[in-house]
Image (cartoon, rainbow, N blue to C red; front, side, top):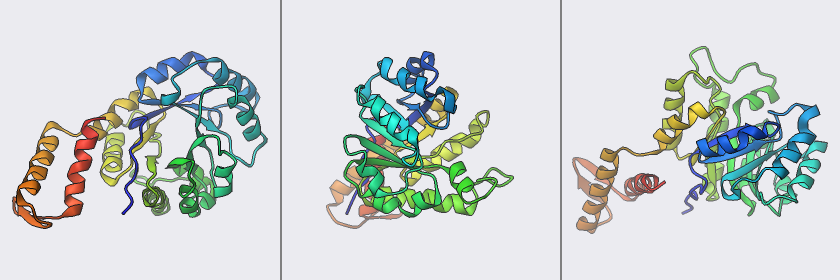
Length: 273
């Protein structure tokens, strides 16, 4: 059985436009890791300067990702050339669509951002590549690639196609022991909505969630931090399993077997993040 690897950078990842170097250190300080964005957050005329900023501004490589432009663009090659002179070796590939694209990044650890129809359909092949450490999905680019107009309905819930993509990417990542990263929540003032979505991401098995504003970090961290009561309950359950000494046993009116024990182990792992 394959288990998804923990994401060493932590659960709250914060995007930062690479053309705003004055924000780099602040973003890194506010989140578990920072994603320096060379793609959508940067206008075409500012991309060259953004690459120079990434090369000139030192951050902790262990807590820094660089989002590259799509492999089908000329900017991708320019991004790679700029990164060669930096210590950054973890990248996020925008609009990832094939295993072959991962091989072009063989010198890097890659978080593949599956945000097109082809990328979602190829998520399994992408996740199987050895240099891929995680998969992320993106709702808005996905719906745009389908000719749609919105990933969510009027109540704010994801439409069926977005939920299908979310689940597909999570399953592909988990099948190959890679981390899955949940998409950003674009309604910045809606803290309650973000908290609910982050709670669901943590409970479903996503290793992290991306943020687009520093104010979102706290809600994501809270979702991934088990309560004292949850930690105590997990410890009690595992202790009862040790005492029972059998594969299946009854505990507080519930049947307990291997999967339930692994849920408890996941709670304790999160408590150490």
